[in-house]
Image (cartoon, rainbow, N blue to C red; front, side, top):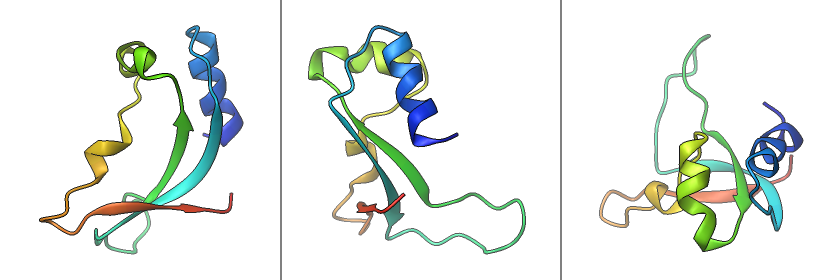
Length: 79
């Protein structure tokens, strides 16, 4: 899904998208073979009050990627 298409899912659900960016999960290892999961993520800033609505349409809070004890985080990247 493109960054724009992902943002449209949110706006279609009545959620204001303040800004968007591409990103990558860090501190996680995946096999680099065809069909393996990607570390690429799409990030959208939305009002906090819209988080539950965003979760209903398949999004998660970025905080689920951050775990200092496990060394996981995320980084913004160019799209």
